[in-house]
Each structure stands twice: as structure tokens, then as C-alpha cells.
Amino acid sequence: RTKPVLLETSGLCVNYGRVEAIHNVDVRIREGEIVTVIGPNGAGKTTLLSALMGLLPARGEVRYQGQPTLGKMSVDALVARGLVLVPEKRELFGEMSVADNLLLGAFARYRRGERDQAKTMDEVFAIFPRLAERKAQQAGTLSGGERQMLAMGRALMAKPALLMLDEPSLGLAPLIVREVFRVVQQLREMGVSVLLVEQNARAALQVADYGYVLENGSVAVENDAKSLLGDPRVIESYLGLG
Ligand code: ATP
Image (cartoon, rainbow, N blue to C red; front, side, top):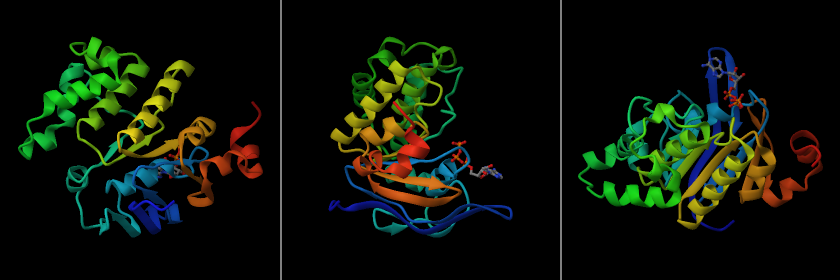
């Protein structure tokens, strides 16, 4: 792991009232890497992503592209710098078409005067041909897998440097899950770094370069993804048989 650091936290803590959901978390994502955060329900994975995106008050330090962000950069500023989140609930505009949902992902760039949305949309369609076939369809009528593709496609319209995905495989059939993980690997080849939060630990570790196991709000284990796949603690708690 020698590439430049893209995002780094140090002593990150998040509270919900008196309850500490994230405690002293240190994670690091380097350029061109897929980093995964795995862990059980309620471990604090979604909270971690929300804090990185500036959606929740947090303590400690977060540096993105070398700059401290906590309390210093708005969500808009972070998105403009290429930090983009695909939330677990996908949050599409159901009444709008696939194409219009995609265009909304590029709105911040449009406002900055960038006028390459059609070309970017073609790039997204090349990654997700299914969306091209359905560009006029209402987003609310898409299947679960198509909705996840649209949520990822919309995020890509913002031209992320670091794409954060919250449980992209949740609720999807095995074939679609494979497709989602294939795209995650394709993104790395395109130079997009990925922070992948997953309950599907085996699939996540198979595509990732590095992984963190989050338990009760703290990092319990971290290592190269390959080593985690062979780590008895990880096998016993998260990989099971198979
Ligand atoms: P899952 O995989 O089930 O989504 P997670 O690892 O993403 O779990 P979080 O959603 O980050 O976990 O939740 C971490 C802890 O914080 C949980 O105990 C949860 O109940 C609590 N929590 C999350 N959001 C809030 C909130 N808005 N108010 C109070 N407690 C919260």
C-alpha cells in the first residue's frame, strides 16, 4: 500500500445523543483502491459513511485529498471535490425518468459550467447498458437491481474520485449482486476509488484490496482483503461455510 492517501480518518467518533455509534475509528483509502468495511447489523457502517459525507456531526479528524473536512467542508463542497455517496436506500426520484435521475447527478457540475453531461451519460450507459434501454422509463417502476444501477449511475454522473457505496448488494438476486461487484472492479480500472460497505463479506473481500471489520462502532480487525479472507476470526464470524 504505497499509493497516495485519498481519505483518512483519525479518532473519528459519532454520537446519537448519549450513545456512541462510532468510537475512535481510523480508516485510510488510497488512490485506486477498493476498501471495504464489513461488520454485523448496527456496527456503525452507515454512520461512518454519513460522517465522512458530512451528514452527521462527528469528532476527531477526517482528511480528504489532504484537507481537513469536519466542520470545514459542506456536503456540496465534498461532492464538488469528488466525494460521492450512494446511500443504502438509493433515494431515486420515482416520478422522474431514468435519464432525468442521471442528469440530477450531474447538476453540481452543470452549475459549475461543465457541459459534458451527454457524454458522461453515454459513459454511464456503457457501464450499465440496462439503463440505456430504459432511459425513458419512470425510475419508480424499475426492478431492485435496476434501481441500484441507477443509483450508482447517478453518482457516476458527478465524476467521483471516491465513490462510497452503502450495501449495494442489499436485497438483490445473486446474478445482480455479481453484476454490481463486477462494476465496482471496473470502476477501479477507470481510476475511481471505492469505499464499499457490505454485509456480504465474502463478495466484498473478494473484490477489495483492503478491509476493515467494524464491530460495536470500533475497528476490530483490518488487513489486506486476501488476508482477511483467510483470517480464522473473520471466517468464523462473517464468512461461515461455503
Ligand atoms: P446495518 O447494516 O443494519 O445498516 P450499520 O452497521 O450500518 O447497520 P448504523 O446504521 O450505522 O449501523 O447504526 C449504528 C448504531 O447507531 C446502531 O445501534 C443504530 O441503532 C444507531 N443509530 C443509527 N442511526 C441512529 C439515529 N438516527 N439515532 C439514534 N441511533 C441511531
